Image 1 (tube, rainbow, N blue to C red):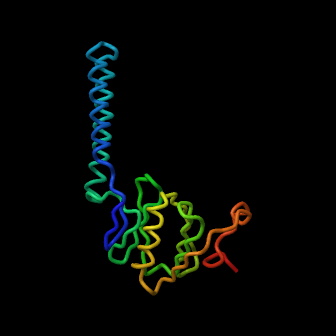
Image 2 (image 1 turned 90 degrees about the vertical axis):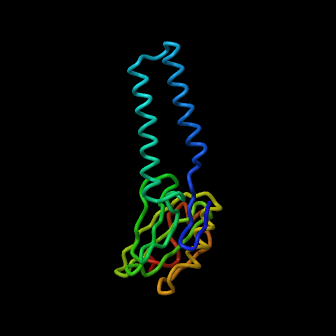
Image 3 (image 1 turned 45 degrees about the vertical axis):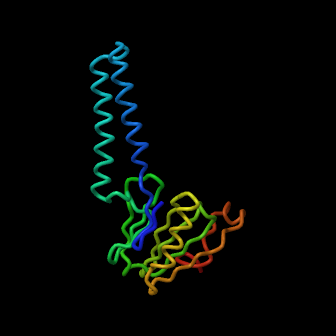
Length: 173
């Protein structure tokens, strides 16, 4: 995990990915060499390796060596990687945002972005505990003061089972 002035990032393990691609290439080549698979299967395996490498390169070109952000500020936009390995990043315009409510247990927190018109966007990113805590610290430090940030205590087990939301934010009387 890398924390910078403009965001929290979790770079991909390039060594692991390179090892896996190399292992797949060697395994496919050996299987072809010992006549376990046909030439057509070898080409399919090589195509799969190429597609994986192309996807990784597109992510590298789009986000740089740090990978997809978990949370980052870019001009007047908050970028949030909304799932652990999801390809998409949420773009939330800061001028439209009125309040951010974070509630739940660490690593199982829910983030509720309340817009000025009263509508809300809520999601549960399911990050690992260190990433989740770093994102909360980053948002507390770098979010503009015009946006109210509330970090609520974890819900009780019964409130969680009932599906109760936080005590503040949109949808609360």
